[in-house]
Amino acid sequence: MKITIFGSGYVGLVTGACFAEVGNDVLCVDIDHQKIQRLEQGEIPIYEPGLEALVVENTSKGRLKFTTDIKKGVDFGLYQFIAVGTPPDEDGSADLRHVLSVAESIGTYMEEYRIIINKSTVPVGTADLVKEKVTSVLKERNVIMDFDVVSNPEFLKEGDAVNDFMKPERIVIGVDNPRTKELLRFLYSPFNRSHERFIAMDIRSAELTKYAANSMLATKISFMNEIANIAERVGADIESVRKGIGSDSRIGFSFIYPGVGYGGSCFPKDVQALERTSRKFGYDARILQAVEAVNNDQKGTIVKKIIDHFNGDIKGKVFAVWGLAFKPNTDDMREAPSRTVIEALWKEGATVKAYDPVAMEEAARIYGERDDLKYAANPEEAIIGADALVVLTEWLVFRSPDFEMIKRELRQPVVFDGRNIYSPEYMEQAGFVYYSVGRRPRGLN
Ligand code: UDX
Image 1 (cartoon, rainbow, N blue to C red):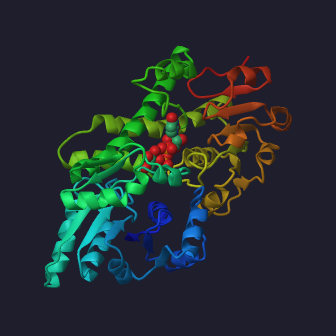
Image 2 (spheres, rainbow, N blue to C red):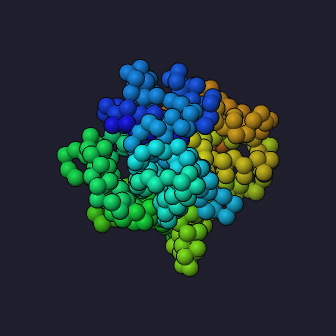
């Protein structure tokens, strides 16, 4: 099969590499010359386990190619994936500029039947806009040509994206033409093994499925964070409550971990965008509004605990921050809780000594050189001379550290754990003052 993928970002690159891996000929198109040059040399612009090996191998086998030539891209594949960014615009709606510009190019250069597949996360109704755009460009060209538009949302988790693509839980296809549906089923057949994962539906339902899935997951997290806040006030332990409710198979254990709030490129953006879409269609989506509001507040709860512990004054204090990425196994800091926390600490006049296994370069790119932000070469170095330790991402390397060393080197043995990765009993016995989420503080006199 010949496949063109517009947009060599996170989604486009994973999609391209995985389709090439199962034997297709894939051409990835991006307008960023530098990015394409680097990709041709096997340099991956993002941190994603397993992706680099896949790109290098398939490039060397000639199945995966890169170009900035849009016309070449339109000429190449029967399947034309749109995987460009849809950043939020000022009011939180998804900005469709890039998606529609690809649609325009396809309309401009296509010479025969094409299947245009929206993989970018786009609001309900976008497939219709893409269809309108291509139709109007074809009309300007005075040509009549058949094409189909399909919605095929991605459900990739950062840090596990290759695995999610190769072994998907579901392949959602929104399509209104039975023949195209079968072509898509065929294209995805290498990934549709052991039991049926191909779920075909109408286009609008597929578009809404993506937003509904992410909003549901975000709701689970905000709900648990809310229960954690209640637990703290009524003297309960959220970790016991989590196990207690998770054992109900209707609720389930996954995605009910309380913490410092969700971040990343999807949940915050998608909850907001669905709320805006609902509003546009005359519906006041109160649950979505609450999910977002609870999450925004949650990012600040650990800061409040820090400031209260130091009696309202953290000016001049130094905080060791473990974890900058919005979750482990990624260097992504988009909407990361660490940013809210660090910026709040700075506002109060404190200094941060940060360590993250992969996201420090990204932090340096975001914040540049600053006197109140230092980076440590390892977790231990961040601790030396700090007033307290703040844990914001649950990387494995943070789970069983040398607490004796930490106690010795911290000016005060205080740990603020935003991910509940330590046992309160252990921390108390080890002589720490220990704050976590949804559990009473330990070690206070
Ligand atoms: C998410 C979806 O999982 C994926 O299907 C979709 O395609 C893109 O958005 P991702 O953004 O990579 O993927 O991150 P995910 O692993 O889902 O975590 C999102 C955020 O929720 C993280 O900040 C994480 O720390 C937080 N989280 C997750 C919790 O706070 N508690 C949990 O129980 C689970």
